[in-house]
Amino acid sequence: MLIPVAEIFGPTIQGEGPNVGLKTLFVRVVGCDFKCEWCDSKFAWKMDDNSEQYGDERLARRLLTMCQETNTAHVILTGGNPCLYDFGKVIDILHNEGIGVDVETQGSKTPYWLCKADTIVFSPKAPSSKQPDVKDNINEWIQTIGKTEFRPKIVIKIPVFDEEDFKFAESYYEDVVMNAIWQTNLDVKMYLSVGNTNTTEKGSIAERVLLDYEKLIERTMESGMKKVYVLPQMHTLVWGNKQGV
Ligand code: SF4
Image (cartoon, rainbow, N blue to C red; front, side):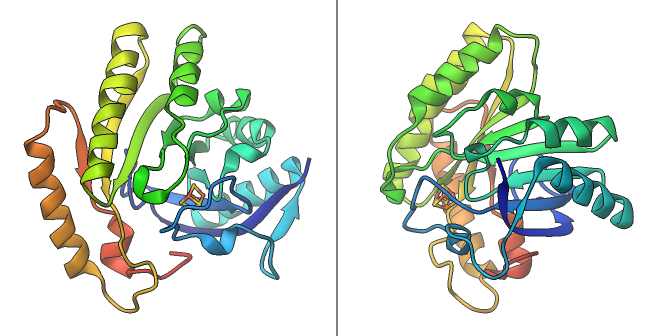
């Protein structure tokens, strides 16, 4: 099966999640089974003149070459939804050459190969996205992986736009993160991310993002979540809504 790729860009820093700041090459696939209202990657929903289809070995070789040319040792597969495709062989080839691989997905699909990634960032979409909840799917996958020899780092990262989203995040903390801690010995962590309320605004958006970040910190300190990370999307502070950085 060919993998449609919207863009390969970087290296640049990971802007959010557990590897924030890490020098990373980004692979953004075409296609998503969700259509979030505030998606900042709508251009990746469909193929266009800039997208390209890859066989898995050709994609892995291209990434290896780019990693070598740019002195990079980490790749993230994002989208769109990378779990619509089979990245098992790509991950194997990159791992064999010492390249780390993270995957970011909203969690609607959990293919077997996902457990090979170093870090899996599930970013379930809160009510403001107007998309279905995938909590049961993520929970079931974590319980299944907990019984295998695989020990990827697992992160639940929820972009928060409003109070309803915050309560949604709290429910994931209780029902997924705490559940995993009690029932498996997997490393599952909870991250909250400041939602970007205007993905088409030009120029610097740092002031707006930092104000929302302060509010999210304050709200989180009042919450019952005991072990939770709160971050802005670092790339929005540096580059605003610019793509490919
Ligand atoms: S799941 Fe991600 S890529 Fe898909 S529509 Fe939502 S924000 Fe966009």
